[in-house]
Amino acid sequence: MSQKPSPAAPSYDAVPLFVDLDGTLIKTDLLIESAFFLLKKQPWMLLLVLYWLLLGRARLKAEIAHRAQLDFEVLPLQQEFVAFLQQQAQAGRSLYLATASDRSLAEPVANRLGFFKGVLASDGQHNLKGKRKLEAILTSVHDAPFDYAGNAHVDLEIWAKARRAIIVNPSGGLVAAAKKRRYVVQQVFDDRPPTIKTWLRAFRVHQWAKNVLLGVPILTAHAFTVTAIADTVTAFLAFGLVASATYLLNDLLDLVSDRHHPRKCKRPFAAGDINLLSGIFAMVALFAAGFSLAVQLTDTFLFTLLGYLCLTISYSFYFKRVVLIDVLLLASLYTIRIAAGAFAIDVTLSSWLLGFSMFLFLSLALVKRCTELLAMQRLERLSMKGRDYHVADYGVLSAMGVAAGYLSILVLALFISTPETLGRYSLPVVLWLLCPLMAYWVSRLWLKTARGEMHDDPLMFSLKDQASWIVFINMMMVTLVAI
Picture: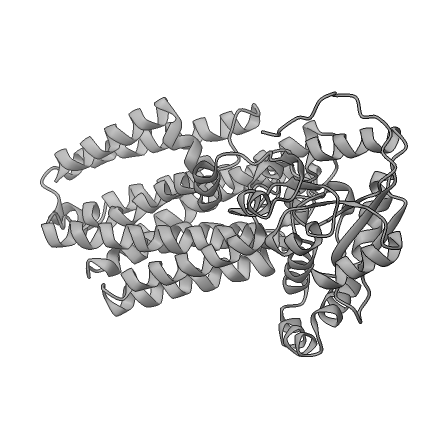
């Protein structure tokens, strides 16, 4: 909500307005965005980043900006504030962009908007932040009055010399600090959604439902003990925390491609609803919490969780852009949850269960890709940005996905026929009911996909789909009767 001044239509104001960039004009930080872009393309450059930092923040910004390739047309703007600036410019007021970001990043943003008369920015030698920014502004106006718009506590020393302050998406306690110092606050703009709800979206807590797969070994190994259930719950929380941390990392690495996606552009980091630096701190905290729970279980579970993390990071940095390898890795990330569940309660992992899981989750991963391709087709695009897939690939991918789904049913049928199964279950013949249930579920998923009715995460679709729940409940009842 913003505090709107009156009258609504601005009158001519001869006092120039200087506008901060990061967190004020745009709802992101260009230095952090550029650093993650560089990290994703060339991870080894992290060593050079540390060296550049030793040479000074201005040099660091210049070196990273020189190598980054950001899409300035999709950077998230503070729309209400931008509309205010457009009104001011139309009324004849002089507007200037004053930022600590490197000039090579600031100027394209200024050019995109078209109403700034000049840009004050870091240049590789001088980091235009705080006192240095104030000096540059005073030099520019020849010590005449000026107004300034910012968002952080470092801007307080600039407002101390400004005629009036405009505060945009302020950091905690900033408005109170400005008023306590008796600065004239002309207006406050804040378009950020509720904090807790936004963070839960960023953590993707709803995705924790996938960790139910950790409980599959309890059912298949008939390990219905209090200890096994408690260990599975601990494993569930550990996987959930680490998975949320990897989601944050993935979102920070995919800012550019997410903003070109019809749905992912609304993710908190892509939309600028969460500060990028806060996201980094949250990611580290989640990793620490997840592994602190994992060490309480078996060593095998801990190493499996580490393996899951390595696979996820390799997927985020590179393999998600490699055709077919990405879907194989996605299938592995599902299957590894089942393996981890077995290791958490220290039971033998069935090779039949692994085979069934791998084919089934490969089918689900291909559903995900096919759904995204159909979305691109509706947008009249020929390919997916950041992925090596073309809309024309849909037919081949859907054929592979259906085949993988039916192969999982075949593995299930072969498992039911083994002497091991006949000796373990009291009524093994009842297990044959699982095959038609699975055939219906897999076929329905692909039919929904072909109709364009599938969510781009098929597992989450199934957890919200009434027909899928009926299938799951019936499969569980069949298994319990057979036991």
